[in-house]
Image: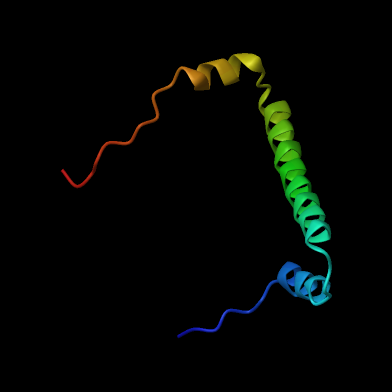
Length: 74
């Protein structure tokens, strides 16, 4: 079995989570982390759309595409 090194984020979270806190505080922290990463994804998508010159038309185009992948085992 191969040992995996913890990332800097995992190490920092272990420090934070080493404290006993109320369940509602834990939920708040989880929500903050979720919001942070969701915001980063949104920023990256906005940047991509700006770089590519995409707009609502691109989203509409994607919504009309059929992206199903067939069963390759057949």
